[in-house]
Image (cartoon, rainbow, N blue to C red; front, side, top):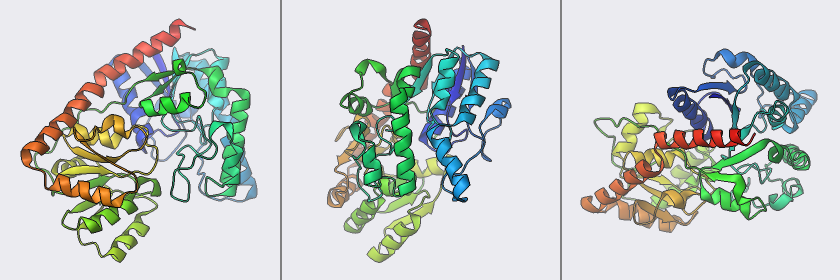
Length: 408
């Protein structure tokens, strides 16, 4: 089968990008031909199809009125992306298109090209952009932002949900245009969600359950290092407001005998270091960005991995990775996390923002007898083997491709 994988980044930048690249590798290993379509970027992987990619754009950089106006147009509807994607489809004649994150850098205009060339489309829904102009549904005030739901896109502008009037206005216009044009509904045959939380969220807002397929993400086998790092409660990932790390630091102050390591980088790093200093935390270490064998060594050594997120996480890769290495995960009752972390069985769930509950749970894990901890670690590993197996995942994806092809 000839499959085009569409994602705005063609390098392992975040969870959606890592998934799209890993899925492409699995499909190639099964003998399928996989063609990427993305945006040019200095960190992109090498591919002969880069000549079809759209030009690079840095949406965070201000470059003057006319340049910013062009960016506005590109976010709302990119004619460049539609034109170049149409050329790719004409030249390679794929059987199916699998879309991931296309908004902003590519725009949903690529779906019009697929529809024009009558290529069936499957789309994995990694976040909430289909339902809300603010794809993370996390407000700049540090709380879940429900404004803009149920078609009330104007609320995004009124309440400045993006933290910038210009950005809020842009994504509001984008949302109204593609709802009016039915861009997604006319082109996408099936939407894939790794969590039931997102499907239920969609159905509650008027989407049909039959439009969605529930398919949890997968994790490729991680070769554990021979020796683990220091014993600690470990957080690894992006250092940003929605991750709930301020609450973790407050919990660390209460659980002062429990060592906490924070591995990662992001826009909140300076603020978090400042908070840790103000709290006088001696049990917290900022380890910086880690990846590969160095990160896995830290995970293996940790007593537990903590995911204190404040946002509606869909199905975070970090949880699957930690559980595949037999780690207890302490997570918040947010989004799809309760589908992955079963309280008291393979980990623990706490209320988001409740530093006291988090502190008590960290202390509980730290003092847990070895046999009890071992049983939970085994349950964590078993869940991943049962629900996140790569071979089963690619089999179900290919079956979905064949299903939409049979209806075309």
